[in-house]
Image (cartoon, rainbow, N blue to C red):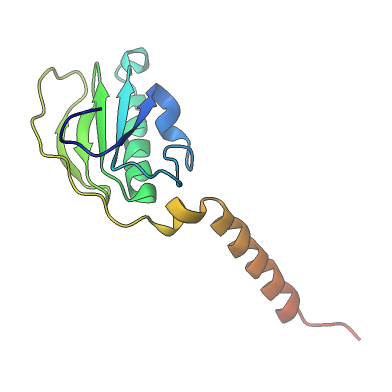
Length: 135
């Protein structure tokens, strides 16, 4: 356990890109930690896309996320997806930051992809009800 910090859900490398798989809904952590090696991306768009996916997971779960990448991009992201502190691609350094607060579990954190299935069902049902009938 990390003294003085809430429970954490560690995400190794690309695990952060999998929506709905980053936190246990039954034992919700207080924050997400993503440890990754983006060196193999080089100076392509890959590290930026990987960082953007991390921001999305923070928003989906309503949890702050700390991302540590050996070649960048590292950062502290709050539960709303705002980047509080960051070290850019290829930058060496230290981020000294308080951990942003978590917010209440979002609907996605509670129900996951079930929300998508419900919306799809409602849309299909509405489509059948609104479609004009032939005589």
